[in-house]
Length: 76
Image (cartoon, rainbow, N blue to C red; front, side, top):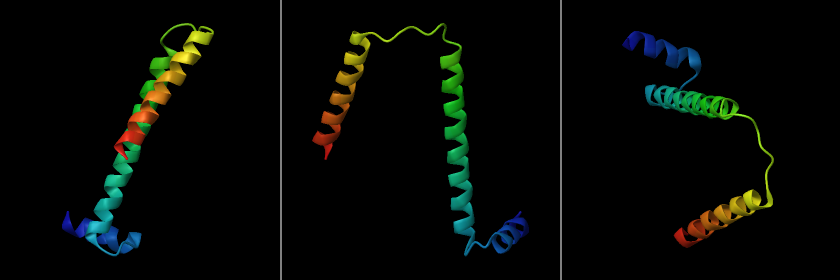
């Protein structure tokens, strides 16, 4: 395994084994985020027929965003 890793570092233009592993972790994080997004999209598609957004729906969304922004501002 060590030989393989050293070959990947040399062939991939990485300056160190640590840099190679950091890249592997970043790729893994991206892949997991992509899988999560795909899962969420499929859940949405399979959740039933779409309904029209009401004025109350939009107001609820606005309130939620305002609350999150306020919490974020308070944390800063």
